[in-house]
Length: 202
Image 1: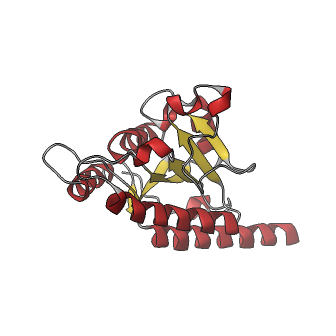
Image 2: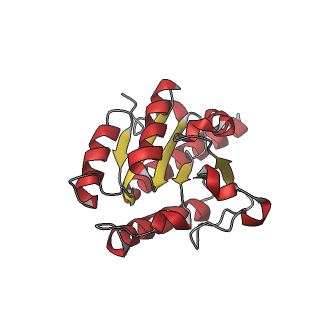
């Protein structure tokens, strides 16, 4: 099982990317047992992650479903307010359930050191599929539990469904909270910067 907290072999690199999955307006559509009460706390944590990442100049990526880029006039129009990509952010269009259905995504995560964390929506589908594919690609991935959401599964409410899917996800990646990940990434970036400084002196 991959362990994203043990990052010693990656500390010469910058902090790993935060990958926001399906941050599109249609992911906020309400259904029975899934509405503002379930999505608002997740969005708040996602905003916190994004704010920290941008303030610290950490890499940020957005992956959106196929229909979100159906035409040139609609490009970017479906992003949740506040999650519109900036010029320096990575943006990928997935063709299937997994983020790895974008070849560019897989290549970019390789270039970033094979370590990243996932946040956002569609944990029961896109995020879980991505975690499984990550293990197959020898990538080390974390799921930010409190910055992600799962729609209700049959016979369960949203919270129960999220707990169940996160339990399955833990077989393929490491489960972290937003604050824990920020602490880990900050330590990794500082260690990488220190190593770079030592190398430049030499």
